[in-house]
Amino acid sequence: MATEVKTRTIETQVPARMDRLPWSKFHWRVVIGLGTVWTLDGLEVTMVGAVAARLTDPATLGLTPAQIGLAASIYIAGACLGALFFGQLTDRFGRKKLFLITLLIYITATVATAFSFSAWYFYIARFITGAGIGGEYAAIHSAIDELIPARVRGRVDLIISGSYWLGSAAGAGLALVFLNTAIFPIDLGWRLAFGVGAVLGLVILFVRRHVPESPRWLFIHGREEEAERIVDGIEHQVRDETGEDLAEPESSLKIRQRTTIPITEIAGVAFKLYPKRAVLGLSLFVGQAFLYNGVTFNLGTLLSTFYGVAAALTPVFFVIFALGNFLGPLTLGRLFDTVGRKPMIVGTYLGSSLLTLPLAWLFVSGVLNEWTFIAMIVAMFFLASAGASAAYLTVSEIFPMETRALAIAFFYAIGTAIGGISGPLLFGRLIGSGVASLVAIAFLIGAAVMAIGGVVAFFFAVPAAQANLEDIAKPLTAHDAEDGESEEPGDESADQGTEEAGGPGAERRRQAQWCREEAAQARAQAAEHRAVVHELSVDTGTDGRAADRRNAEQTLAEIA
Image (cartoon, rainbow, N blue to C red; front, side, top):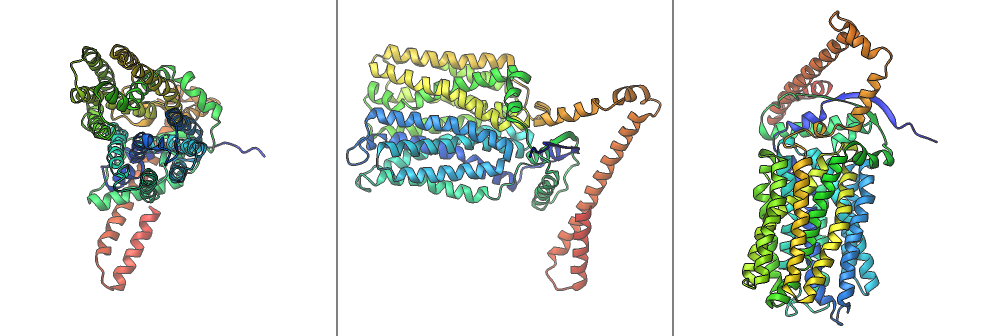
């Protein structure tokens, strides 16, 4: 039996109430519970790269170098497909359900990887692990942007994305321990290395259970009462923590609720309604994926082939590289909220592209050693890492809320499929030639791709700094509400012709204003009652009259 997908039209202040909240423990819980998925991915990718040589040993899985490369490609393919599959489910069934499911999938698959006994089993485990991580990207970024206040959304998003490199540094450091045969047997250490990711995932799962569903997703999907309860609870926590009353929200949003939104409608939004933004998202993701994956997956072979760095010392360079990458978003992130999105995205993409030019020239001239080479790499990726993080921020905020998770998944998948696969293949093949000038060409191609992303951002970037998500891209359901109003017989003409004379249009506006004032007064009364409850709760005595009054005030607060 067909189900009616459209429900009633409502006016809500939930977005404005969430955006005006001061920073609190609730926001830290969101960052820790959701943002640490990037740390997991960095740990996972680096750990696999570090143990790859060990897996070729006959005493372990006995894989060939080609099979190791195939396993990496399978992981990336799983991440791309997982992002697309879980991305559309996130938009349909909610952020919380999916970010719990995808994390459980990751934990299960990474534990299964630790018990690998053959190549085919290892491939399957890596594919499922990648699918879990890809699904995490879609669910996590959409939830974070809808729960974090607009004024700090840019810096928080960039730091969270940059935390990938903290995981990468930790993975490289742990590899030195787990691959030390003086500590662990040759066929045990690499298995324990995968177990570290699973343990960290379980800790994150425990924290994540207390992160609520996105109120924005709830009120659009016909669950506005639940959205209001969640926001009320968050506001109550913030008041108790800060001891201050919250300012009244300054705006409201009218939307037509829909319990489901067809995937065909979601898929057509990016290229039909926002074609320039689609080109922007694609350019940013292809650029960062090509350069990042090309260098990251081949950094060890670059160091060993051209500078004779021993495999045992390679993790030290990975740690330096990773920490430099994290410092980029950490130090530049706040500028994306103050200076603005467009100048910072253009600056980081073009800046990293320009820094690649002297790197390529000095690399060919042979004047660099392993330490000066890694120093120039770190300088280049200091800017590139902030730009790469900004790519995820951009696509998560410039499309309507109903399509946010799928937009992240789509551009991540396409960008990774184009740049993330071609980059490592090109760098790997040219590094294998042993000719420095050919490797320099790969660096120059990476610079060109990043430069294209910067140029596209110069023309198409959206001024989204400190702006409400609903102002950057109006929800499709808000368009529905406007269309519904315009379709009412005589509505537009009545408003235009009788407003000055006090006709129906003016009367509706007066009623709407009265409703808003009544709602504001009710919230103020509720705040007063909650304050009294808080004061009475401090008294731990057994005064029956105080207890009765506290219960009465609590009831009045709930009614208000």
